[in-house]
Length: 179
Image 1 (cartoon, helix red, strand yellow):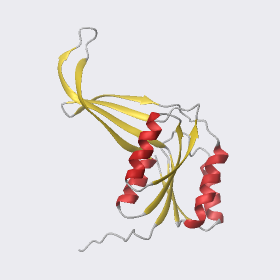
Image 2 (cartoon, one colour; image 1 turned 60 degrees about the horizontal axis):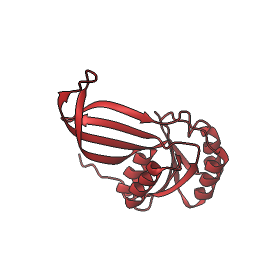
Image 3 (tube, helix red, strand yellow; image 1 turned 180 degrees about the vertical axis):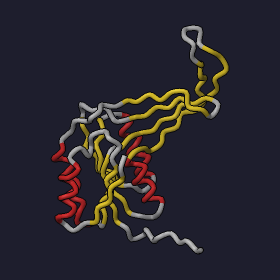
């Protein structure tokens, strides 16, 4: 059986949802802390990756699709890193930036290829200007073919029916990716 990949070169897709930065601190653990019975990791590398709805947008871009990512971030270093990583891969970012919000960041501490702990930096559910996100969606709908909703339960899509109705009003295909 011959399997072919669909042609994504002409696809114009909006991804809307919970964007987050996945951060990895990796190193070796060769001793136990004298302060508590936990391993001490000597961090050798730090890696930032695109997570959440951003990862969905990244995968579409890697397949050749033209993708716009809509989401909510804080006014912080994590949002700048996330935006740069996405734009370097061809994803257009149109984020609602909330000064009072911290961008979602998942920090994983790794040793000997095993995750020791994950630290979540986030305010859940996120509070933001829902009208600003809807306006961004409505602004981008006319030049796109499909809207993908990528919900990780952080609050960006708490009012998803409003966004779906906006897309359907312009007869845009709607896809949903559950948690």
